[in-house]
Length: 292
Image (cartoon, rainbow, N blue to C red; front, side, top):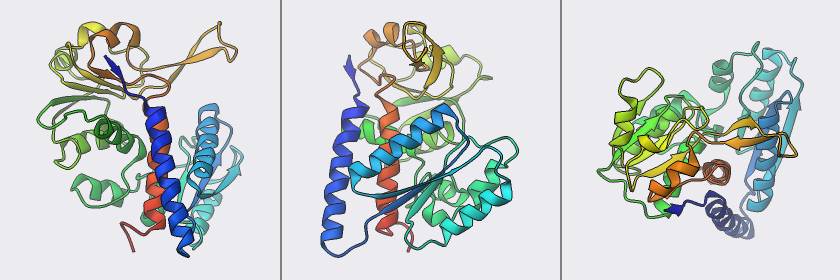
């Protein structure tokens, strides 16, 4: 069993990005600029955005954090999006999800200029990804295919089961694993209403778990030598920790790991690669790689 170290891989990629940014700036080019909009004080979002700011520093990017209280109106937030769309110095920006209930998330996503949508959530980027055109790919799926490639894990022709069908992970992940350029796998998408879910997993060479249920994937669901990618990060109470909680993945790591050829830990697996992929998208936005 080999651990897939997302933290070390992300650190290496950020160093590569920093070298490229140094060369761009030295040649008289523009320093990439990422902006993040954070609404409210959700603990997970706060941590995530803080890590994005630190990643920008590591990559040599300029970063801007725009904060709003929970009671911001939808109109005010859309006005902020419009301002960032028209700010020529900002190459890419994200509006951190989830948003408060009174704001229509999809409306906000669609208001973002797709050429600055480094989260890869805009319907234009999602559509282009689905048919294999150059675009911003949402960060978590991009991070996962990057990890598989960096570790030299064979995916072509393999049976891949994606657990979960969210717009952020499950759907784009299944699309990428299907495509010749990224996974070239035979893909099955399972969810809470899937019949024979256990049987599907037992037949899989690769399982990508993004179902949001701690410890959901158990040892009896995994065949020997399978590759396991755990996207889940749920805070579960833990009195022995100073914070009072620990992060748990969707996989029962302790019992599943011995059966695997490769497995990602939680934390330190997919999480750091998500932020790293956002940096890759921001660099591409700065270079006008996909859209002029």
